[in-house]
Image 1 (cartoon, rainbow, N blue to C red):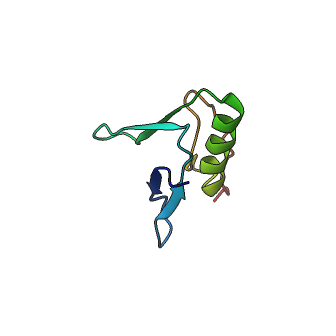
Image 2: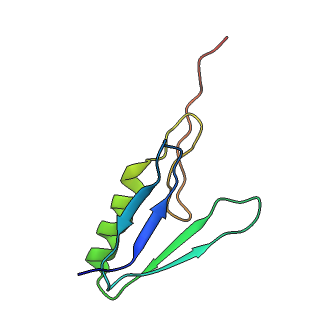
Length: 84
């Protein structure tokens, strides 16, 4: 089954190409000066959560700089870095 493909450039040396099932609809919102938003929608809630978790697993949010793939509205607990 050939569904749509999602190209993610997450700061690695290569882009991550992820093939998505046909049940999932993808929309991207790219506003200047802000991080892009990937909007997923589907009837199958379990599959939707699985795909969202898989996208997030490529670059999980890290506690020092807060970089990574985050869910909308998610708060990342930040840690203090090394003290000089």
